[in-house]
Image (spheres, protein in one colour):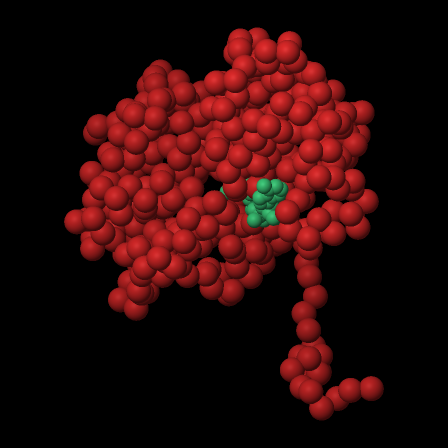
Length: 417
Ligand code: NAI
């Protein structure tokens, strides 16, 4: 079996960590148990371009148990957990192409390896694999049943492709399922982004002016967690409804130019480009710290800053930039996803639901393979509800059910005051 990982000797550590997180992934376990009996993915080749973490490893095992042949490659050059990559290769015979810190050339060569596998189903986190397929491997598109997409940014890219008529295969927007973005983006990114910032800096969050740029699902989670740790949170938004929501949550909403004057820490989670621009960083206070938790590093103009200020590495994950006037700002993890670069990504409890969606998405593709066309599909509502039901059951939470009379009342228009 061919693979490209950092060090196979890290496998034992990775195996232990995979087993530890598995305890907190009960929904994926239930799906895996069913897959073991039904083998819905028999003879299906799956290439998954995802963050190679302990939670992802458990998704790969569920897919393999369902009968699939699985290959994994990184969806970000800095997010790979090298011990997990080693454990998947050594103990589970799953080829992995991912090395933490790989350069862009290696990153894309690994994606090509995932395409050399000739998958019938692909999984993406940011749409890089599907994008390479459309740009460089058009001849392979007809081999694919479909591809599922994990994150907001990827869904935006794929919808843009669909609108342009450029999308040539069916896609399932896993991100848009409620059991994904309401939990993974909000609670997962909220907690793990703070974890990444704290691990990188060892700073006290309490008492800091903490600027959250983008008050979407990720931004809401981050703002609430930072406030919970005692920070004074400022939100920057471009969408009036979201900005209003932040105001009514009791948060301060400021224009970016004003926010920059007070920020001790500023984090971008917009999915856009240069949401923290060079000009913004020039406006910042001396000593301000910047990080990105959005999918692509372009959210923060790291390149522009590198050209305009003198760079010095001051500790792992922290670079100091000194402008000509002597002002210093600090960038964490080169502007890449801070929660995956400096911490361990999302906790297993939320990835349990995200990856339950991914596992069921693969099964859905196989079941519906003859009825699909090139477009971005939503996860069926029943699948979403089933995942939430299983999660509640695993957490020992019982909920109520509508009575027949209540159902009738809610579906009729005749009964009023
Ligand atoms: P969302 O669409 O719910 O929220 C984004 C928000 O940013 C919107 O409210 C939008 O109005 C705002 N925004 C856009 N441009 C802005 C600008 N220049 N200034 C201020 N606000 C701006 O998206 P979501 O789900 O919160 O995702 C955000 C990003 O985080 C995406 O790139 C997504 O892929 C990524 N993501 C990262 C994760 C991680 O592990 N770090 C996990 C999940 C998503």
